[in-house]
Length: 109
Image 1: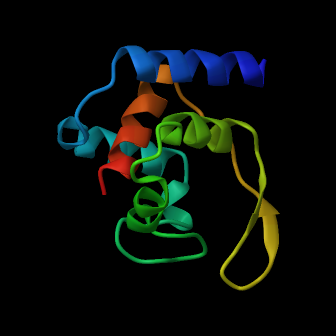
Image 2: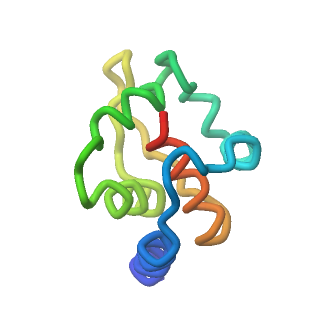
């Protein structure tokens, strides 16, 4: 089911790719807060997890960036926190279009 959802999100992103500047920041921020992403991430500063600017820099110029972020946001991977501990990353709860909005926002940083 997760693989199907991830494939669907990747297809939506590929079919509807928008310029990074067109990402709807207000809606993306609302979704990030609703999914508790802002507990560990911020746009320009590290918290428990990397800033969105660091994430965007990591994936800049990589053609599979969206696909990798979809996988990360749907597969509950173990992530290493800045204090050296590890925990399971929470899965994004929302529609494929909402996930696309969040991913485009992150990559636009």
